[in-house]
Length: 286
Image 1 (cartoon, rainbow, N blue to C red):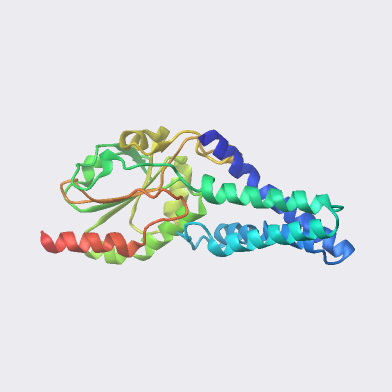
Image 2: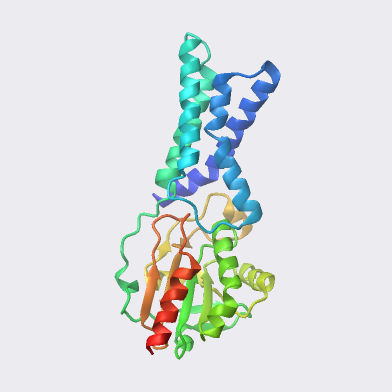
């Protein structure tokens, strides 16, 4: 299943771009056409979303199912169907394009985006966080035991290639002073190549722990590994085909889990205020 998802997300943006581009080309060459305009509506809103998150990397969460984009895609398909019927079914190209755009969007929205994860018994509040090892930004061996003595915020993210992950890290970096004021250690952990982790640490230039989960061993220990989860084609940039489920964990000074977010939709990450509230409540009770 993960391999199918990997192949789908490698193809879908290019497919949507092809449909939208061809629809716009047809209308520039032959004038406005309701059928081709409908095909554009099934693809262009998602392309705009992808473009925005890739360029600005400022969105760590979306609505669960894009109600506005879904409405636009549905309206586009309906417009193309109406035009197809009105033209006595003599314009099948726009109908095929719109149907393809709409179906692929629905697949992305309701299948690809969902992670299919249940509650992980290892990460429930009150449990002791399982020990794991990683590599820090300087290339040194790191063990989770070194986190004891302070409350810790751990964020497992997929890699620098994921714009929503980068937006999430931007949020954390912006909240660093607030977290440090409460004595909280922040660890950002990814199975990406070490050079990518080092580049990320240099980019943000804040005293957070940037860790590489070599061979996804920590994710495997915590039960959040995703086999074959990397989008097809990203291997050419040096990433491993296995990745990690986006996960946020808060532990106390003794390593007990106070909070965990196990999102089932990769487009939805918790608001920083959510776990900061947990941390403040814990520190006030100590």
